[in-house]
Image (cartoon, rainbow, N blue to C red):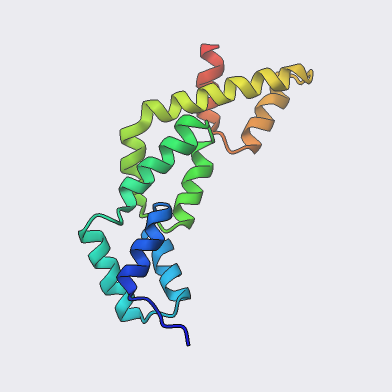
Length: 147
C-alpha cells in the first residue's frame, strides 16, 4: 500500500513548483487527506519560515497580471478575493504598486482602443466594450483625457 508523505515534505514539494496562497495550500493538503490539526500546524510553520506569504504572493500576482499584462485591476482584485487573500493585504499591495498598476492598464487600454477603432467602433462603443472587460470608468476617463 502507498504510504502518505509527511505533511511538511509534501507541502514544500507542492510549493516548489509554483508559489501558492495559504488557501490554495490548505485546500491541497485537505485533498491529500491530512488532518485539520496537521494542516494548521504545517501552515503556521510555512508562514513562520516565509514559504507562504499571501501579501508577497499578491504583490507578484499584481505585477504579473496588471503591470505586465495590463489586465483590469477590478478583475484581478476579484480573483484575489476568490483565492482567499485578505482585503487589507490586497489594498496594501495596490497602494504600493499604484503607479505601475495604472501604467500597465493604460498601455493595454490604449492598445485595445486602437484595435477597436480599426473595427470602426465609435467612442461610446469603445468605452462600453472596455467596461465589459472590467476596466474602471474613472481610469478610462483619465486615459481618454490624456490621449
